Image (cartoon, rainbow, N blue to C red; front, side):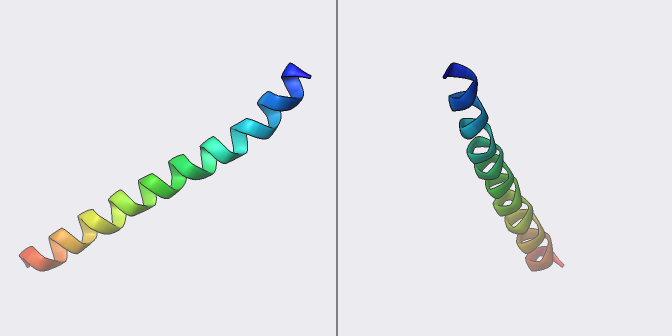
Length: 36
């Protein structure tokens, strides 16, 4: 049961983490584009 819950929990955390990383990357590119 614990292993199953962990298996279900991980992809969501990974997806959320990737989403936050993507947002930061877009924000950074936008800032650089504004500077130049």
